[in-house]
Length: 126
Image (cartoon, rainbow, N blue to C red):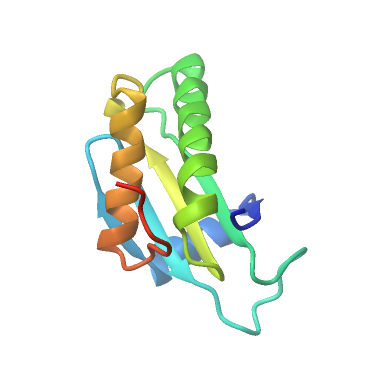
């Protein structure tokens, strides 16, 4: 079984991930990853993975943005719970390609991003 996913909801957490983390861009998404400090207070399990989702108005109207966020949440649940390193914060940023990209390609985008950022844990079944 994989790790627990907690949600990033505060703007300060998103900004901390942006400033203190690393970023990888793929056609379907942008992933920002940041290792949390040991003394950083969080509610819940301290070793949990925290993840946030954002899609700007440039991508489309509210319906399009919400659809993109739902797709990002689905791939995060599949990939991050099994393959992301604990004690990290991840922000998935939707792009215009997020809504048109097929699901398998989005899964691959997230997995490649984790590997490129050095945040991939676990053995792949490929």
